[in-house]
Image 1 (cartoon, one colour):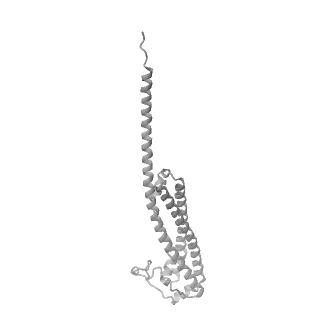
Image 2 (cartoon, one colour):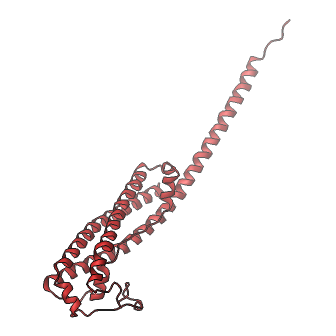
Image 3 (cartoon, helix red, strand yellow):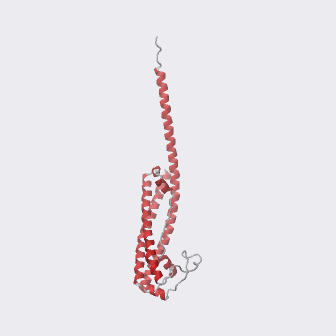
Length: 241
């Protein structure tokens, strides 16, 4: 007489095995998800700190940039009247700011690391990913414009000032609050060199070109700061969820 096959026991054991496998997969998936969310939170905190730093740096840069715009505009007015006059900006500082190559270096950080490693998708907020990518393009436009301005200064303004005996280094410190620069020299506003400078149409044309580039860059700085503000708002909303 053949022994009866315990189908019911086999079914229960099979169910237990399958359930154990599915449970193990579920635990692994839960753990992986938990690890990813923990990494996302760390990335968000890092991004928040990074973009707060970008905001501070950009704000300081814009403050200096605005002063550069005022300096060039003041020099243009001096060319129109034939002499320099300003209670706001000393002549040495105006000349320094007019030929200061604009540069902003925000460096690489969390955002660049996420993008270069392909882990930007760890950010579950699709809008945040888009804003970070768009911010990079705004920053690239600003940097490209500043590179062009630097080339304009080196290839056009520096040679012109040198030919006309205008010192590239003056007694006035670039920061206006530290000891005077060694080896510098200053020219009085009513000196012969300054009179020639402010009566030369070529100098006015150079200043006009510089002024136009600075005004354009002002708009790019405004867009950059607005983009940073928007990113920070989205990061804070993501951290609150």
